Length: 225
Image (cartoon, rainbow, N blue to C red; front, side):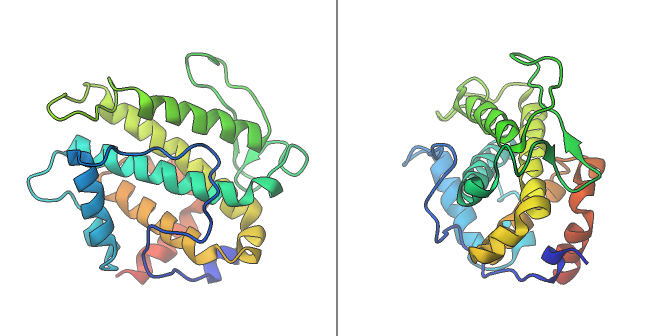
């Protein structure tokens, strides 16, 4: 049995013992409607019912809800990966993988058009920098009230979430022993459970993409029934 299938989930919290992040944290402007949505998300997470917490709040815009949560997941993964960067090196992880059956090659369609094989730290650096660039693009993720989301927003959000999933998958498969040693296991499990329930609620990641952690996803889901 995979080691993470015996783990536990902590009470839901957006905080963590670790404050080290891999990339700078993406802040949502205080006082904005998106900031209020984020506060709403944090409050409902505190109730402990994750299935309910991920649902679109009544009267809210779906794109905005997905945008706020995507930023939050970026920040969470940023922090989680930040705790284990010293163990994820060119020599320990010469390829970006999630177990022996899944290997990822990087391409962003702009700077790197043809997928390249690279180490996990390099891949994750490319990936998080790319996500950061999307989140900082006001035409894609507008932060001002009344500015509409572009027509391609949902497809960009799906690509971001699909790629962020790969960081979770790499951490679980290649670095879970380090996570346990650092006592970050419950934090990782809670963050991943929140992420999975969110993408399932809005059908944002193709089931085939989730295959590297399918067993864990089923376990987290069955505990909630």
